[in-house]
Length: 166
Image 1: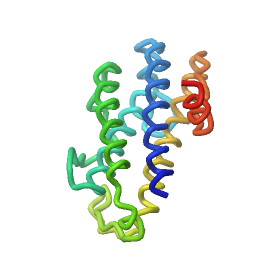
Image 2: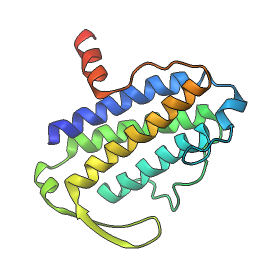
Image 3: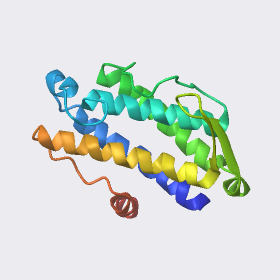
Image 4: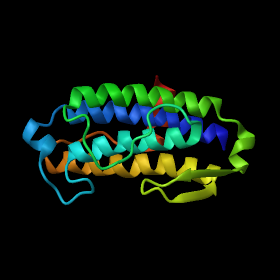
């Protein structure tokens, strides 16, 4: 499972680089346009992803930012958000590289965003972490399509194929 999580961390960075290049094609109006999607806009979803990743990495490592909300847009401009995303993706890879396989059998004790104590299998929380990223990247991918931008496929299998041709 450790190898899978490391592959997912690297694929995460690959997909985010592609996605942010496509998001840069949005006009400022499209970037902030209100939508029925979670977190209200492409800007909201992209900010949520960074905040949620920071929250989970803090829960896993007790290091880095520990946001008190995942429903904000502290990076309203795409360029600043992209820089934060890239830095965070490096942290995600470092986390996956340093992950002790024995820890995957343990329980993660943490507090939810509302402050409730939680205890879940550590491996399941890491799996959720990567699944959450894919889910919201899919929303951003769809929003790009609604704006007339056909973004490349970001599925894990495409990452693997890209690694064979690189």
